[in-house]
Image (cartoon, rainbow, N blue to C red; front, side, top):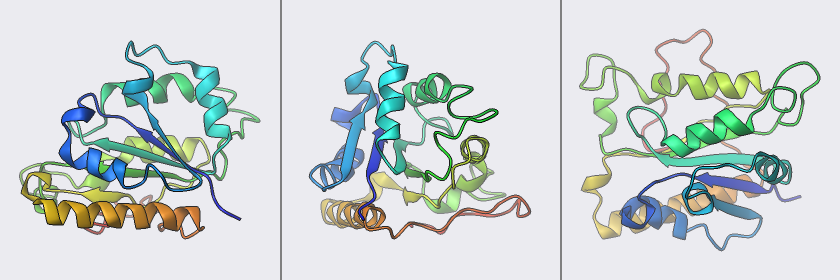
Length: 198
């Protein structure tokens, strides 16, 4: 049985984003995949919580696609998390709406993988910078899966970009087919990092 994948896309300058737009275009027509552009849907950033919770309930896997903004996500995605993941629905006693529903990121960054390391320019790995998201997923009872990272995006020529977009489509299709990325386990591994380019 196909897994229904919801891509929550957040980019305030999506039309000007060469890389994120290419990734998104590669998956728009995939069966059992819903692309939900938050900035397009909520230009005033007033989120309809009931609508979003119903949309999440209709899907089996949540993909958070966004550029890395100040070592985190764009403001509207944070707003989405703050308003949609309510007590009594996403977490708390008897709140099981999200239990077992995988959470996975698809992230782009201007910096190359080697600048996201201990003692490097950005001092922390991508895995460490995403810890708040990992803990949020854990609190909600959601398996937190290894992300799809597209880094050093300014160095991607058109051929490399189209290849990466095809890889993204294959990755998303894999999740539809039930081939999920591995679960991230970092509770006892503070130095853990993601495989570059996965």
